[in-house]
Length: 347
Image 1 (cartoon, rainbow, N blue to C red):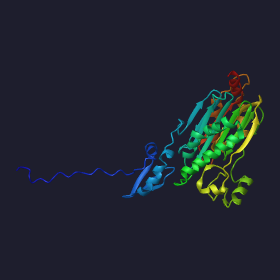
Image 2 (image 1 turned 60 degrees about the vertical axis):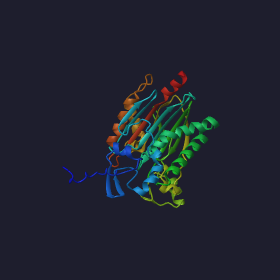
Image 3 (image 1 turned 135 degrees about the horizontal axis):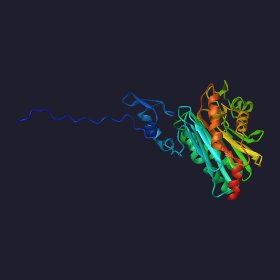
Image 4 (image 1 turned 30 degrees about the vertical axis):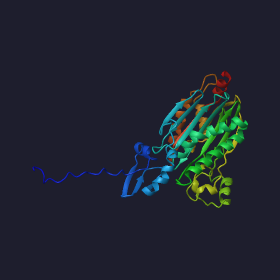
């Protein structure tokens, strides 16, 4: 029969997917991440902020954390970005790498006199900063609704988020953590909760008031705490690696670190013009005194609403020009205290 001596058609097997891990697929699509195959069951992942290598045998453990690593983004882009609210302005400047800063701005309908603003500065990963963005303020208001205790609710919220991060990351032990600088505006009372090296500053016409301390190892009390816990500080870094003395996450260093926020309060008055919340990348380029002098040069009149966008964009660009060594992401939130009061009274 014609064609009887033909060999049967060979069925080609579909190529085996290089990677079964779902937790980082979106990052592979969005970022310049390379997956190199070492052998049948071994891969090396380059340019990923969390995972550096993976074997198929380890993928099951990573998959358990899939929902955590795929936290839904709150909408803030990962790069240069700005946003104007009713009485505040946010501006972010990327250093060209992954934007690991996050921020949160929230006005509370249930408590018309309250507002929440925060800057979260992630290191080694953006994952934990994103989790703080998604959940920390919710935890605070859940606690505050029951107790009406501001400081107590802040501490409980931080403890809850820290326990959640540790529980979800303990098995995989990825590097990294996040600082947290939160402001709670409650009528004419301002409460600042801080972990890390971001800073909160209130500006008046001729002076400024710093409302947060730097949690790094140039701070003698912070250094002493770490050393008493058994840690070693080398070149102002814990174990020669971590530059901040307080943070959320950082499992590798947790036994040497204090994760309780430092809380400060400030009675707001008509003398207060602006509240600045900014990550250390911004303050590496500008200090509060230089900010005050730059604001003065703009000759802002008290009778007119300040152009927060003008102030924010100007200061961010000035900070970028002044940074000579380490380039870092920058996030700056400017709150107009006067406009906050006016909005509160209108409501």
